[in-house]
Length: 185
Image (cartoon, rainbow, N blue to C red; front, side, top):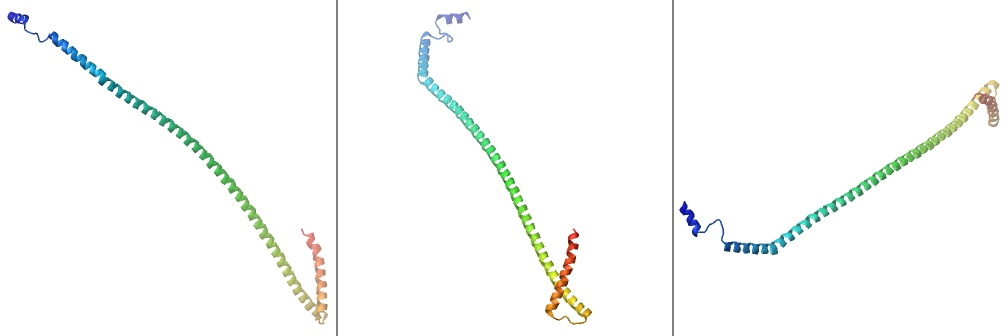
């Protein structure tokens, strides 16, 4: 063991401690590598980093712009929806008013038609009454002439005489019934 230490102290190189020439060459190589990296690789890395940062910031800006546009579109949609609802309410109210007006017009038209039908019926009734009264007068006149002919015993065939007698009789009958009819109601 002593021999080994002596051998190591006399001239053999220790692998743990480098030679000074190796240190200088290693240092020059390291500085050269550092210079090449600093000159070529670092600017490229910086450029790529800057581009990536710009893309990210641009994406964020685009996202914010898209979100702002979406918010504007949403607000516009909400305002259009509110306008559409107001328009629908107005149309509903107009339709309701128009329906009410049509209903009133139809009621007025029905009332007018009803009044026309009633007046037409009354006119027809009056006409039929006058016709029946005329028929009854003629029939009553014939029967009166026949009865008078039997009572008197002579023929009342003379048309002018018979007509005058019948008319006089019916006028007297109307005169006596008129005060009774005006006293009823």
